[in-house]
Image (cartoon, rainbow, N blue to C red):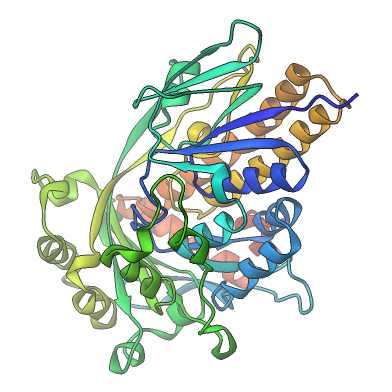
Length: 442
């Protein structure tokens, strides 16, 4: 017997919007509440790499037309993954196989803003911007209430915290869950791919993710974002949001919105430089300007190959950001209630494996399947949520651990540790069967 479930989602990020798309497509009532005042409020971050796990999750949740827009807005897929030392000497490289004719088996790089535009497609007034979540509570007659900072209240049968690494929903549901500082600090920026700038970029970076091991635990990551000639004119369809009468969302009529549209098709190298906090001295990097962050990064790369220093030197100072790398710590299953979590709200991980967004997408597809079954009367709500949570805790925190292990490996400070790491990379480079196991693709 059909349940007529109503789902409240806190957070209009990648996982939350994907879940909303999947529920709407299945006829489940859903509302999304986002603290940002518009789709373009936060423009930080550049590129996501959606792997086959993420592609299959999107395929399962999105209507065919929306999934086609995701494909159309994706950048050129990476051809290879390369590990180098700071003098551009090869440690490990392997090709990424391309499955012709498949829309789910290949990696799909896409800009964060472009993906948000795709995932908003067709959701219309389901998404409420400018709604800062405050607390939840059990509803008197069953279900759950969400209260917001502006005094508004929303009622539903289930509340999903998809509100990111600093999740207020998690803070109330699981106050014991911890997110800790790893001691690693990163500076990142954006190097435009145009004219002579493109010619100066080392070839491996143009072919795919490139991980560079420097001395004394310094590390750099770089990857190019380029588009096929046939797709360079494709942009997310923001027209509904430009004319939207609800929630005051007219973001693209602003200067910021216009900049966001232009940036959604930029071609660039996204890069990040990271090291242990002590390497940067006592200064507070978060208080520095972009130009100052550029100087700090270059001061750590004095003996690096000029081509790598050049990427940092030529990057626009306005694109520089810095952040402390944090990670969640594993939690055990908790007593299931009508509030659950998705993505970074529970299993936030370091960026050194690039699977955080894909794990959130996996969560969205799994939770969609559970909630649709409940809505159709095929399962009871709490057992369905409990099964989702147990599975999500298992694979989510395994990904957290693998990501943390990679972070420690590439930031090894001791000479012996670095020598061992390079030896492992070179061994994997020569023993091909080890490569998929090493990269977690077995």
